[in-house]
Image (cartoon, rainbow, N blue to C red; front, side):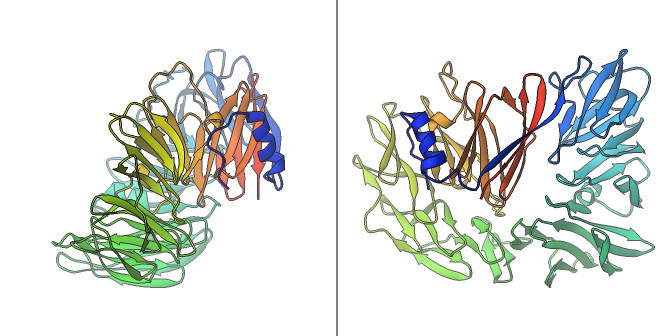
Length: 539
């Protein structure tokens, strides 16, 4: 249920939302004290700290002008002479003299140590540069690919998995990116070569053995996994086998990539031919050419959609069924849901229409003597669009006027912040699950086609021009979007999909390290000079 776009009486509406509208049922917010700042720590003055979903943490502190790391396990590590935090990987080197200058520079010639974000275990020493690190967000998993002039070595939780000579791989970085994968729920899939054979291992079990090379592994929360087996690799002949939990698909193409999303939907894309098309396999339900200019979306194992641009009639392929639209042009990107419903904006002649489940609406989107300029559309046909004439700009959600601007010369600018992984290389904000739409005098935040009320967003009254910046914390998991925004002094509001709302009082600041899964949001906040962990559950 969307929330009203304008709030004149915020306390009354919040009471209605949280009590009168039933949103409070099935919600729970718990608070847990984690740690207070000490005079020697840098928790609030620098970026050298980590707080994890389960409440574990670490931070840098100084004692007698020497740097140390303190972990929630009670361990104190040091003295150290330098530290680097990049993409949540923590690297440091031991030494009596502190050399840290905040720039995060560790010489590749040092013997260095590191830990995962959970910091339950320090591993090392390592020698060389980190080509890539992969870590488990909810489980203590850390995969490292370390390179020096002689070899590339893969480590998992400090254990050496395999070492490869430069001759083994032409593209070391690509293999570093694809030999290991972690899901949000803690599963890990990796491949390696040992005594002339290749192995694929899921958690503690070997699931496949081959004399052919294995790479491009991925595992997701739904339990689905995939990896690629290169059967033959010659100059003019190439064969590969893509493995999934329940099927194997052989490909004869110089290059092929399999995209797997969290819901188990997949798309295999092969090398484009000279016509600008490539053969694609989607969920085992479609096998054929798709133009490189098409928009392709895959929601899960059963639902997909792609546009079929061409001369004459515009077409959409929805779950294997082709729909011909009486339109000259399709705007932006269509939207569809898990029940097979879909909608798009299309132009026929001068006018713009809604097309819902392949059928054009009787009347065009037209007001003030001009046609609509589409912003986004939902699968049920709910549309955000605007009209611009010589005098004004009018922003609408269906027939509801949201905003009028007398600066008719401007366009509505949009910037995408979150989009579901649907394997489309042409993403724009027009089909984003979370985006900001900006005018000179005002900005709007949109979650899944619904406006977030302005009073629920951080407001900067001194700002004359908005910079398309979303103020607050946000994220997405399993198709749901969360947003944490300041709604007053020492007050923040949690917003899940514009459906679930919860106010948090007495908080000075919300940290950026948040953890989101279906039905649960974990975040950290500062109160006074202490850090607290909050867990919000909803149904």
